[in-house]
Length: 565
Image (tube, rainbow, N blue to C red; front, side):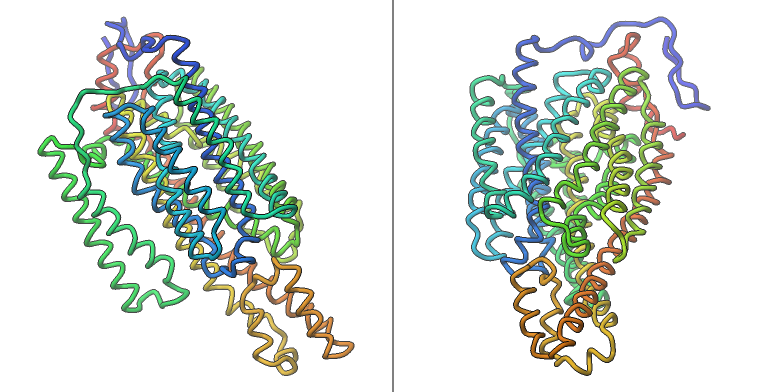
């Protein structure tokens, strides 16, 4: 009989009882391999898009004149994909994973083509939002499919394979994005999705079986989705505008925050009402009764916020401050991804072999915190070696927990894998979206005063205000043509013209470095919070072990989550 020790919060195992059906193979080897082929292709498509675009962004905002909306290209994508994730998760539970995959890939490819054809920053933001509608169906359902095919103990082994796909895209993506931008046009960072997506479509249509289809009547929570959007958009706008276009305590920001909280509160009450009526809410509030789910959601949100704050601005720092080319800035991210892959594979093997995960999560957070501290030390005098060391340490820490919390949630809620996985992905995306909006606002808000403070007093007396105003936007650091034009203008100041120009460029770099440094301060603070929270993560036995019993499985899903370590 399995017993629970209240002091340790662990299961004490005696003789095993009846083996769970959940531990038995549910699909043939052929079905499993074909399904995983489709899953890995979809993962490659989605993850490649994320990595290849980031390196090209500095050149995109330079050509389309959109430094003030630097983060919006990504936040629009994340916002639209975020609100759709729970809906797709519900649909995949009801209709099966395959059909939702197909819808997601088609929308994603249309959005990619439109994004590549954008002529203005506004068009690009809008088309990236449309692309996000398709992206919402890709990674979350791919992860849910892995949960369908394998027990939690087996998933540790496949974590290395899925991590290798992310690693491949993370290594190839930034380098390819830099090469494409430097040798062709940034538009091809979007067009490159098309051939990969077509191959993925063919694999899904002809090779992948449908999973988890049901005859259950479909009930989609459209009102809940509308309330979620009406609550999320004003909150995102408030975080984006606060500190840059409006003061944090201005009527505009307070008004947006009030509207957002009102709709989000309405969303929470409505979802709870639907669940009491045994309807189909987007997110079941009862999920939050499970301690493993709550802690995993919190950790995922915090770490994704800190991670995006750390990684998203690295190409901008490398190209703008260090003066590294687009190709080289993409290659600088390669050590981060290699470290992430290695630590992800190691953590997956450790979880699979030992059946324990809490100490791995703690170790990952310690390393991540050190990496964040190293990024915090970057300044205008830093060299590329400083940046490489920081990203290697950060990547090693992030890799330990990259897939860990998904595994923890799927293990704690085995009968709600689709919804639990999509909910976790939803909150991860929410964290990333809000972090990018807030951090973009912090960066742009800090740049201008830091730039003007760095301008020598004597230079302000010589150079007209109108000319200085041209440097109010750090886009000049990313545009060699603009630099040549300005240097030619400064030639009118005689022999001191080049000196004055270089002093102004140094001030621009100081301003940009200050803005990015403030972002890293916030990221480090978030990682500190996560370091504390991870100690409250429950340690539950992983299903799929040699002595797993039906009674243990019920205990995993209900009783144990209330215990803390």
